[in-house]
Length: 356
Image (cartoon, rainbow, N blue to C red; front, side, top):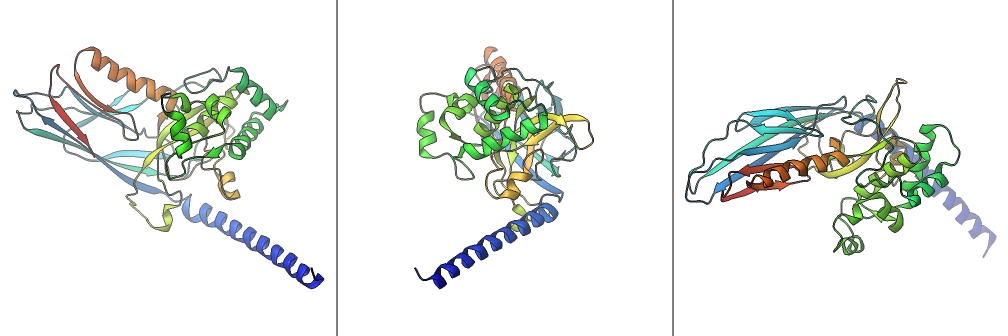
C-alpha cells in the first residue's frame, strides 16, 4: 500500500475518533443540562370498566390501583377521578381504592377512572428518595445472594476492596459490560422467550441471568442487586414505570403524555451526596451504550423513571392480597404490571373487567 494512502487512512481514522468524542461530549452536556435535570409532569390515566353479566344486582367489593408513592424525586397527586378515591398504604405498596362502590344492575356497567399527575425530577436529588424496607444483604426472591456461584462471581469482581461505593461501581461495570441486552424498547428476543417457556419465573432471577449472560431490565436489576448483596453492599430491585424513549425531550415538553412501560432497576444503600446513607439508584440496563449513559445511571437516574416500590416485596404483597380475595370465594380480576390493579366482587359474581 502506498505510504501516502496509509497516512491518509490514519488521519481519517483519527478524525473519526475525534468527531465521535466531541459528539459524545456534546451529547453528555446536552442531556445533563437540558433533559435529565428538567422537571417533567406525566399525566397517567387508567380506566377500569366492570360489566355485570349476571341476572341480579351485583356490587363490587374492591376496585383499586397500585399507585406510585410520593418521594423526594417524584410527586404524585390525583388529577381527576370518576369516583371518590382514598389512599391506602400497604405493606410494600401504595393503593388507591374506590371508596364509593354502587350496585350495578344486570347488564349494566360501572366505569372507574383514576388520573394521576406525576412530577419527576432527577433521581439523585436525595439519597433517601425511596425506601419501604430496611437495608439487607440476605437472599430474597430473584436475588440468590447466598448461592456459591453468585458469591464466587462477586468476590472475583470486588476482590479485597473495602470501600462499598467502589464495590458497587465494580459490580455495575461488570453487569453493564458482560450481560447482553435482550429488550431495549423492542421486547425480548426469540432466544430469551424460548428459554422462558415451561419455566415460569425461572428467567427472572440473578442466578439465571449470570448463567445465561443476557436478559431484560429485570434480569440486569436482579443480578446487580444479588452481586451487591453477596459483596456485602445492601441492594434491592425497584419496580416501576419508565418512558420507553430515554430522551423524550426530543419530541415532547411540559405535560408530555408519553406511554409509560414497565421497567426495573436497582438501588444500593450507600453514602449519598450529603454524606448520609440512603437508597441510591442504579440502572445497569440503561447504562449500556454511550459513555454518558454509563456514567449517568450509576447512583443517579433521570426524569423518565417512576418508582412503584421494592420489587422483591411488591409482587409478594400484591399476590398476598389477591390470594386473600380468592380464599374468600370472591370473583377476582387482577393484573400485576405494568399497571397493577385489583377488582373483586361477591362470590358467584359474573363480572367482565376491562382496563385501559
